Amino acid sequence: MPVCPFCSPDQVILSNNLAYAIFDRYPVNEGHMLIIPYRHVVDYWDSSREERQAINDLLEECKVFLDQRFQPDAYNIGVNCGEAAGQTVFHLHIHLIPRYKGDVDNPRGGVRGVIPDKRIY
Image (tube, rainbow, N blue to C red; front, side):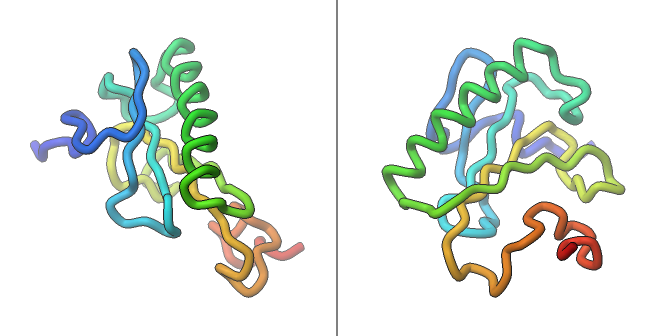
């Protein structure tokens, strides 16, 4: 059984009693962070109400941190639940991705871009 990369937190940026935040090792953009519960749960649907609240609290703290450090123009928040949705690490993690004007030619559709033909509508 492979070792879960999120069960032993390393280089934690922010945390609370149930979750922690790190920079993504393979960032989409500068400042890309992951918010992760300490407890090993496969995806969002397996997390407790308390863990979801802790994750949401950290999302807000991370936004303040990233606003101060990188001054992004916008954000995407995303979570992959299941292999068909693109999940590759089966320990819940929420992506907080800073967006910058010009980082793509046309950002319209945002997270709808997971299915490229449905991004622009």
